[in-house]
Length: 230
Image 1 (tube, rainbow, N blue to C red):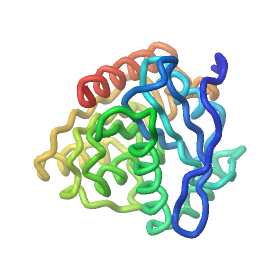
Image 2: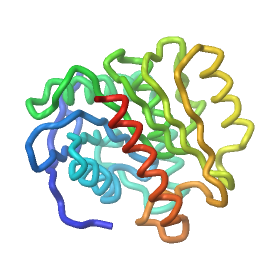
Image 3: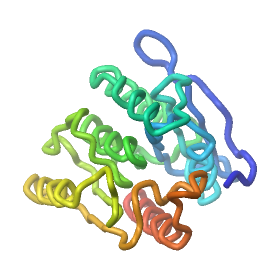
Image 4: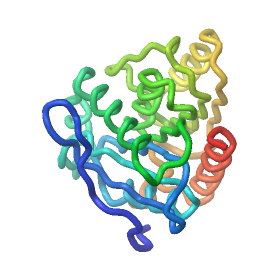
């Protein structure tokens, strides 16, 4: 739910042009950086809300628009947009977002977090494998094998938050991620929220939103980011 914008749109330099995005800063002007990666619906108002909420908790939050203005009005359109992402380009965009955040004069410290939802949760893991300066990854219900990554290159701590009744992500996929992280020797916690389905964090989608579970997920994410980026 939008409570008033604390951020603004911006453009991120990237090879071949400019990547649009949204940046929200805390009232104090400085904070730890968090890269926010959107769902397959694009950089919609809800993702801006996530950035604003993080800013109110003292973080500098940057959400790159990986679809460059593309928005989905239906699940079918969202699937099409997600399928349009090419690994080389999205990797380049993620690296540009990480660098833009680290180089921003409002960001404190030399390490950042990456948080993503659905497709973005998987991309948060991908971002972590591409930069050792991503110290904390939060993946909300996001396996997406179409965009592979090498867990061996991941140096960040991981918090994975999934839904018990997710019709898009099988329990076997969650367990496979848990086992892969353990096999690679990564520091990770995987939590499966009971009684909810895919997208339950998104209050802009009332047919999926679960207020109690979303509040718990938000608290888990904040506690993790505050601990890992301290």
